[in-house]
Image (cartoon, rainbow, N blue to C red):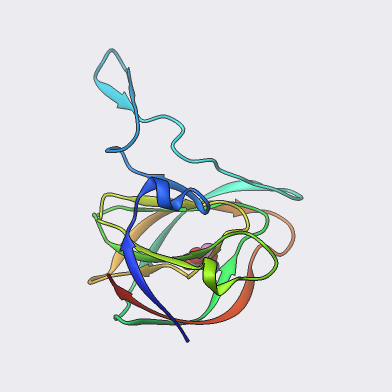
Length: 162
Ligand SMILES: NC(=O)N[C@@H](O)C(=O)O
Ligand code: NI
């Protein structure tokens, strides 16, 4: 069993896995006669393969208990997957870099602070969505189209907060 402590999520630490979506750590420019700040192009949406298109969905998830015990990670080889909380929900993230095998030494765990979303780049291994404390509602942007876009890799992990 791989034991991990979830560290506070930062854009720098998440770079190997994708993007952190957070208006506090990204630039903006004014639009709409100055009434709106546009936080532009915060994450790279990838949609690969046949008939590929971007999907916008809403996930309503029941909370997980800690320690979080996982028996697999998954990946989406044909597209990215972004999760943005709609009510400042915190969630646990477990990731490993893209590749056909997972090296346990490269697996990382993070916890968000409620204001952060994430975008897993195509092929990044990750735990399925794991919201903390209360039912969570998330805007999800990922890839639809032909072909299999979800692989699972067995991995026993137990996650606690740092
Ligand atoms: N299956 C699905 O749409 N969700 C997972 O990919 C997930 O990462 O939660
Ligand atoms: Ni996923």
